[in-house]
Image (cartoon, rainbow, N blue to C red; front, top):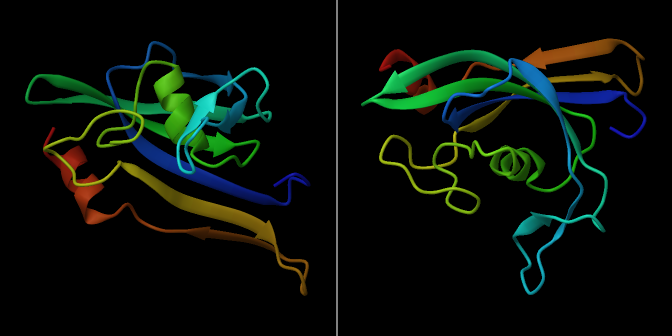
Length: 142
């Protein structure tokens, strides 16, 4: 990712309606003190840059949600999860950086596309995968 030859794109369902159609989140990330899992936004942390683009908004049971595409410029642990929380729109079902949800049994985040240069053929490869059924069902039940 540092050499910009491997790119990943994600889709996530965020709690709430984003107030911008797209943007860049630039907030450094470090390991949270006394935790081997949790990370935090910290000015002394490693650079972390996330690009986002609102795909659509919808409501389920009078609760508002946003389907958002994320592209990472850097690749920090929990980067999208933490950056979503940082801007005030945690990922649906994220029990570490948001809250549990009756709508889904996990955080609603999915890596749907990877692009890279094949190390032998030097061909530019793009691989995409459909959303998993639990996220598809959320988008249908709006």
